[in-house]
Length: 400
Ligand code: PMT
Image (cartoon, rainbow, N blue to C red):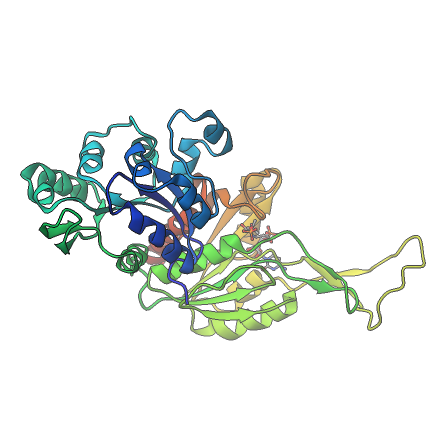
């Protein structure tokens, strides 16, 4: 069971003897399903070699603000936007002071200022430094700015002194950060979510499908779980780990997805259709493998059931949110689907762009309901999912 499935964590390592614990921390974060990118300050490099962190994280380590090669790969602003959480562990007294003053003279300082992600620090320093009023004031300032402070622990320090200032252990850090993602706002609410593609068989070995990876729907399921909802995730075939803490139903075809949806939605409050359901299925599926002797092959396709329209019609208590995959006239076509399918809201994404939508890690969408429309600019699907849950929460309570 994983606590941080698909969460993207930027691990900032600053200069201090506790930097050696960050190597272990990378592993513990990955064990819980997180994707990790490491940023090291010049001070941190004196204690741990970037190569160690690179080998453990499986990705190049970011060190310099003016590193042309690194900027050509993933620039520091892009990296700042990539993360769901910036975790600075260990955070030295000096770096904490730099954060308070908004100094961007290191790559990590610049990322801290540029990131929209949650921020957490695990301080590590000599106990006298920790107790100094300057440090106490700085830590209070960070707390006021919604930075989560983890620890420090008390005990024997590297210098031989005894007192508070040791960085807490990697396992405790992992436990605490997994709590940050939980908001509890959907407590007692049952949310049904569809995700991924459906497959419509042609014969025993071939099928018609699409490029949906399931990332959007799975991110929404995780965000709903974090918000305390009772979640049922109904998924077509994808290569993702199912989020911890939900009822998970695996389906293949549109017909199977429809049966699962109708069965579980009677007691549900919210339905979110993020799946890319095949609009057509093969009229008569061949029991034998279709021979490839002929130059052309004609197949007759028949319309699949419209899952979201069926569920909206059958269960009037449901707050139903669809997705619209459009390549032009985004808002116009999305509004038509909103009305035709009887939805409460629709989320339109532009599938003509290769950087968002199908099978990408980011998305940019328009939220359209009966009274309003708003745009969520490009961001990670994890972040977008959290924003969508917040938006659904507002509209759902408004409509009750
Ligand atoms: O899975 P990813 O790679 O992360 O990509 C995410 C996504 C692009 C697939 C997702 O964001 C998205 O747009 N999902 C809906 C895709 C789609 O089928 O759009 P549509 O415009 O054809 O359908 C509109 C709505 O009707 C959708 O909520 C869809 O689930 C639903 N539908 C469609 C056909 C059908 N037979 N039954 C349905 O319920």
